[in-house]
Image 1 (cartoon, rainbow, N blue to C red):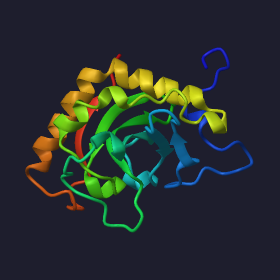
Image 2 (tube, helix red, strand yellow):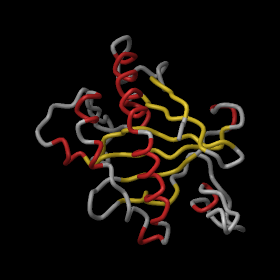
Image 3 (tube, rainbow, N blue to C red):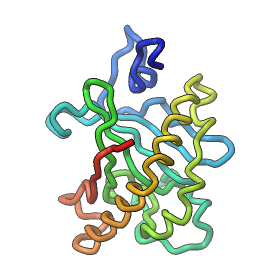
Length: 186
């Protein structure tokens, strides 16, 4: 990527003349690993709904099937939801660099929400080397998998902080969007 002089987020955004649309998922239909079922997508909120200098973020999910018969803390309210469990999102700035990890409340991604300990026990399953392969961007899934592995301790701490914050609110509290945040460190 460095050799080509193109940032990571540039590789998932639509090429000109197509325009980048806020709230849209990139790639369209998400990037799903055919082996693990883990997935990711990139999107951006309108400028007034994001941090200064933030461009957008990659949301990463484990497949619901990884949780067997374990009872979730919360379930999606929408009809025919994706069968996923949100792990974390990695935010990028307008220079295309990763800045911080966030853990969101359940209503944000309309996912099946599980306790931090259950997600932590399954983090090795968040393996996405082929996610995006059909769209020619599998290297993004590989990069995100490496970022997750390099940040394993931070991801665990993030999820535990999320649960601490969740103890003070509810999964459907729209005043509680981001429950935990930690800087991206290598």
